[in-house]
Image (cartoon, each protein chain N blue to C red):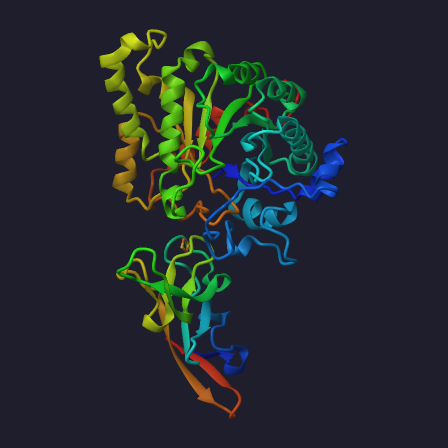
Length: 123
Length: 354
Ligand code: FES
């Protein structure tokens, strides 16, 4: 099954939106490099709607106490409830616990014009 | 399944309190820009400050400030039978150090606003009496004034630099017993390092239960429950997984050191089972067997009561926070029966008669 869930023009890099696929809510994210990623719109922790959270960056792990290196602007999806951080460029992997990931959808972009195209999800 | 939520935060703006304040209190807000200063050193912890990002109102008003939105997002969608309001802790009269007169006026204004805009607008909502606990005589007056409202179920005490067993608070306990009110304890200032702040918020949030342990230990060994046999205590927003340790430790100490506190006549764990109840949130992720083990060590499945802490960022979902496949009987206790037993006024469904 495949379905057009959004258009490339709907999102600027660093933005996300909710869409519907196969009767489920999904969150479509556009990373800072312009690529699109789609995940089930349900936080694996307690089920919050991820699309209501924030695409932001995160301080990377550091060896110096008191040092903050803020990286990855636009690629970290933070849950609207307890704030868990998921890296959309790394299959939705959780920053604090690598063993957990968001459920990702296969996706392709069909160029229709220079400006806009279809974002298609597959199952 | 019916559900009684034991910790919901409604939020007031200072402007909304104005109609309930006499002069000169009103003008301290309108003319002198009074605001309670918190000196919070941290970034607000989550995506939308201390609130769930999806609980902010579409028109930009803060989470918890609108009854209609709360009904839709929380009460209707979870099928709440009752919800107990605990305030948004701003203003937080009990945690004002100094200017007790203003704190007392604010507590009264808050209670009147709460009754008019929440308790009398939704039959499911019950409330907490706010007081200025730094001034126990004024606090007792406020309890006398609003404590008999059929939907006021508890008095909120602060966690501050006077521990709750101290005779300082005893007049408040006496008034609580008289009006069938329970005591609700909710942290409002950093619960560790009395008067100071932990270096990181993550420490604060991790150690909330330690301040609950301080308070419970102090109350029990001060003999509060011997002196006020009908007093009950709801420990709000500290979870409950620390309780088995505390029971065991206190019983051991009592066995060895009873002679120091001869007014204490029962094993502390029995007192806890008889007089205390613990709200669940913020719950750690537990497997079913882990939860069952904790309950077994507490020696009771009747002193835990589910709470969401809506609309705060550390909200617990009634469907997802507890492990799946719990027995129906246990679920009924956690989600409604235990709270119903704990708060006698809930039996009456908010009626003044009978
Ligand atoms: S529901 Fe997403 S972090 Fe808890």
